[in-house]
Every structure is written in structure tokens, then in C-alpha cells.
Image (cartoon, rainbow, N blue to C red; front, top):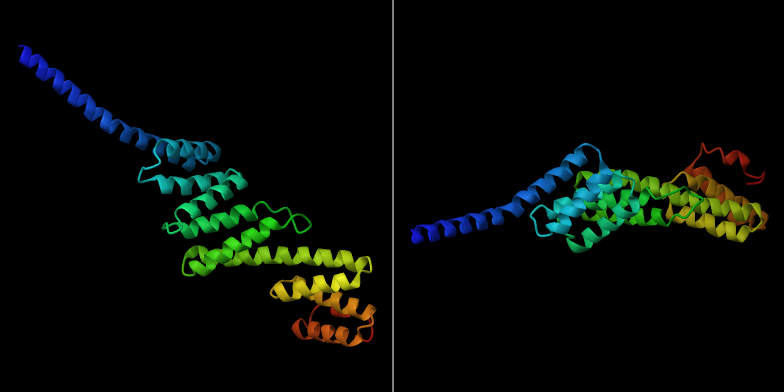
Length: 241
């Protein structure tokens, strides 16, 4: 009888051990599924927290990297752009060769770009967004995200050019023509494919003209005519240019 009781106890111990062994797996499944449900329900704030809890409890789970990527997305959709940026940076530092790295680079650019408030404010997020998009385009040119990054990079470049142009206008209006010329030159050299170039050429030509740099002014005006023959800025050039 005692042998039977001992055997029963051992069986219970083994069963309990087996249950304990599988319980974390089931709990991990539940937590991950819960986070996914929140994400699919567009409850992005709670999804962000759910993925955070999952990662804190199960950092070695095979789905951990996927959970991190989804947490970046959830934070971005929750308009927590600084958090999304920070998470993306950490992820790329930790697992740069992960299969979804192109997507994370794209989200990093998006998170930085979303922090912009316009050309007249701090444009450091634009510069950082451009860096993320360029990295994505250079490292992963054949991915679907590279195409989207090219379009967004152009938008960011347009804003950066407009920022430089706003400074050039500021100097020009105050008669600081040398400073205005230098700012216009930056727009012309760095942002050749942006709409800001036409006005930059116009301002540079007029500033040179007012400084008595007639030859340089005519060359700049000629460059504007050559590159943008239909530009409305041509009609505003001083007589003689």
C-alpha cells in the first residue's frame, strides 16, 4: 500500500513538474496573443504596453524580435514618436541583421519625420530622418520600403531646403547680402532637386547685383533661366539681369 502511495505521490510530482514546465509556454502564448489582439483592435497605447510586458517577461522567446518590431509600430501609431524612435534605434543596434531591418529603418525615419513642426522650427529631426531613409535606400535598395523611403527623403529634403531658404530671406530683407548669398549657395549645392532652388538663385542674383558683383549676378541669373525657363522669379529680376 505504501508503495502504491509513494508511486502516486511521484506521479503527482511529475505531473506538476510537467504542468509547470508548459505553463510558461502557455502564458507566453496568451500574452503575445493578447498584445496582437490589442494591435489589431487599433488600441495602440495598450498594445505598446502589452508588448513591453511580454518582452520583459519572455526576452528569450522566439517571438521576441517580432514583438519588438510590433511594439515600434504600436508606439508610432500611438503618436509616441520619440519612444518609437528610441525603440527602433536600440533594436537596430542590437540586431542590425534582422530580416525586418529594412522595415525598422523605415519606421525610424517615419518616427523622426513625424517630430517635425515645419521649416521655421528646429529641423534636426529632418536631418536625422534623411539619414535613416538614405541608410535604408543604400543598404536595402531592392526592398519595398526603399521605394517609400525615396519619396519621403525627397519631402524631407524639400523641408531642409526651405529651412535654409527662410534663413536666406531673413538675411536678404535686412540687407545682409553676403550672408544671404552664402545661404542661397547652400540650397543650390545641397538641394538641387528641390523647388527652393529657383528662389535661391533669384535671391542670390539680386544680392550679388546689389553688392556690385555684376558679372556673378548675371551668371546666376543665366543659371536660373537655363534651369527654370518658366520660373516666375525671372520676371522679378532687376533690369539688366
